Image 1 (cartoon, rainbow, N blue to C red):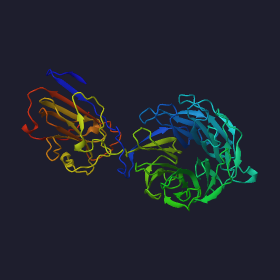
Image 2: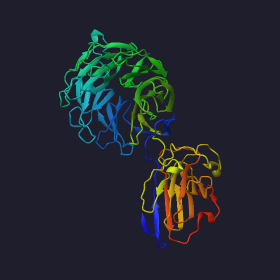
Image 3: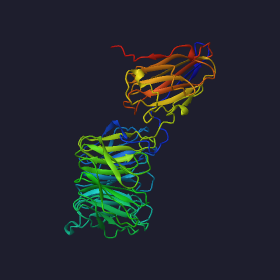
Length: 545
């Protein structure tokens, strides 16, 4: 903001906010990948499945949750910053256990299909074109539908629906309807389903290309027989008889990805009874390897796939029901996986999803907590190094510049000369970002930080990049709104000055609400920084209320 100062010259106020993402730098991020601070949002009773997508066409990812005992779908719309409005619920059938999201009626708005396990039916909820949904339309399904997916199986340009039915495991008396296919009439209306036998207790279903013929295929986990059924698609909406592959004990959920970089689709299953995930690799023709198991948490109920650490390889996330946590298992870059790293969740987490909720280029983790009727969101800390991570790339502040600017210390490196001990303790967790300012005339600078969720160290240098000789240093408890400020810093026209902002002792550096304010008063008879001794403004404490 430009305004007349008391001195009859220019005063510049710049606001810099924390949390603006820089371009991801692959390979920079290791565990922990998510901040300890999480957000929780309420859902209808007993959330058990998650689908993500842009429901209201604002370019931000929204969340839909199937709530088993709420007999409802909870919709949480993104506010446009990665946080969410309170849930809006829509009634469906009894005990919805799964849902899928996609444009069923060709209006370019994502609709929902829900599996109602207690009444053997499917509910279709069409999007009204604004992120709200019309009343459900119910279709008779197979015995105890447990999972649902959507894709164009018959090549007519619309999405068809595939359902895994737990009690349709090949028993002739139950109709041998382990997998049901509902073909779309083109307007979102589903036809009568056709069924195919699978293994014992089908629990999860995924549609993808598993062989090399170009037709979509179907995979189903069979929890009782400990295997996965692969059905080759005919290209006309039908399925060939399944081929079963052993995967491990109690496969409950399944996800797919190219884990080994050979351009075909591999499979991972959450193995509830093994406390592990089982990975089977595709040979390129739709046949799969023997399973390799990797430890997860206690009773993993759900698994999701995505590149969580930004190295270009798909990683794994699990929701562990009896562990009350979620696990991240990183890809080693060759289709094998490392040790799991866990993050606390709510009560009985049963579903997990990965999505970029705040458009910063990395994936957040969403977990549905069955026992306490919430979803938990874990913010990813892997956006890469800040653009102004080092002195050589200090961000320019000028009299004509208006904020906001990136001031994000979340992944900044620890540099020599951080002067952490100057603020009362040596923590080994100080990370810094840099700014530079070159005044057009002699004057003074008043600079301060306030409002972060951590203590800050603010240091001023006379450039270029003279980190060994700080001129001014201020430390304070910004988390309690006690400002770190350097007042009346005398500056000389044409000289570069550097400002380093550091998060003293680490702390929770995510949603910091950190702002850097720079006020200059130029055009006065000032003196250079060398003309007075460096000073340290110690930790001032807020007076008692």
